[in-house]
Amino acid sequence: MGSPAWGDDMWMTCFGKSRNKAYGMLIGQGMDPGKALDRMKGENKLVEGYYTLKTLHDILKKEISQYPIIDTLFDIVHRGKTPARGIDEIMNKL
Image (cartoon, rainbow, N blue to C red; front, side):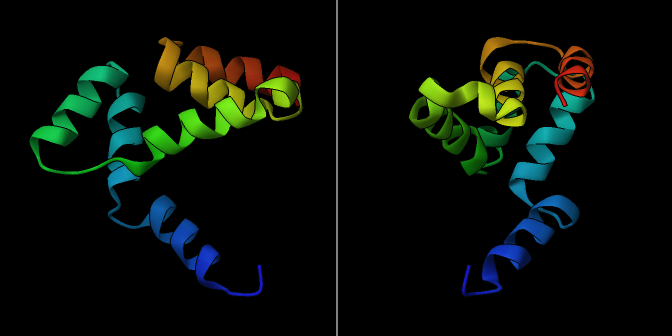
């Protein structure tokens, strides 16, 4: 955290024209996560967050209950939970 670069990267992912944001917007609009990933691949856009989320979830699996946002995002992206249901569940966890 000695560098402000992580903050700039997060800011651009959330508010800029990032591939991760575009992928999330497709899912939020109701597209199946797998189809959204295929669409992004068809546009030659790598969605790093998709793979990072799986890796992070695997690393944290023994303590995942301590990370409800990561767990819910994983359920949406990799297990097909609807975003609306995920939001409801996470609001009840926090």
